[in-house]
Length: 274
Image 1 (cartoon, rainbow, N blue to C red):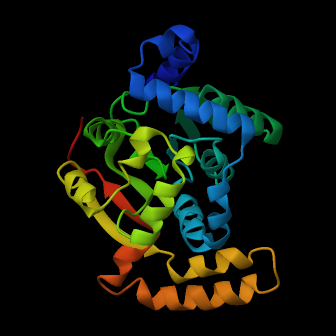
Image 2: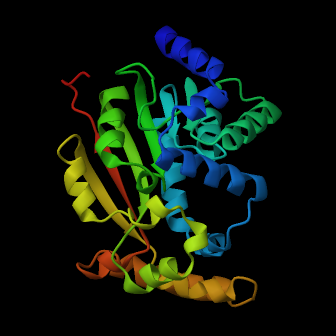
């Protein structure tokens, strides 16, 4: 733990304009895009998250099961809500890292306001975290792998995980033609890199060459039909029906490939060290 804390303090001292100058153009664009987004917090796509309580509940339960007494990382943490959740769940240390300076500042402020002393937020590159090898028990990566170059991000996740450590990933799925059309019609919501790197099972195949992949689950298709009703009295009844349909449909191949999102765990072998 001491070497991990030393690395985090060192990274904090490096947070400045000089650090940004060392990033390549792709990463600078991600940084600027997400700094701007965190300044406004306006994203029309968030209306769809009103129907996503199923996957959100699954993520929350995963944190409750795995974070207590452990060193937890919210990888590409945004405003750090999952690190805050892990801290409240009794994590020995809940860390958040993100390329966006404003995101890190917001995460720190929330932790300070809530008195969460077992947190640490730092601005760094998720593809080159500069954290010690074999130092983290569990990592959550929510909707962020498609922002990264997996050729660097996956080996880095493996390196910083302790033997036996695990990662939960929650990602959009790149098969449904209607959802792909929506992304095409809303280019302002994404960076150029993000548009072309939504995950499919092909990427999961690549991940399997580095880590064990298990417990793949598919989330939300019919539930999306409730979105237009979110400000009406019909929202909850329509959502219940959609969730009931999804509870069956998301178990059926290939219907499950039409899902909006999927989750999967990545596990590092007990006998493997970086």
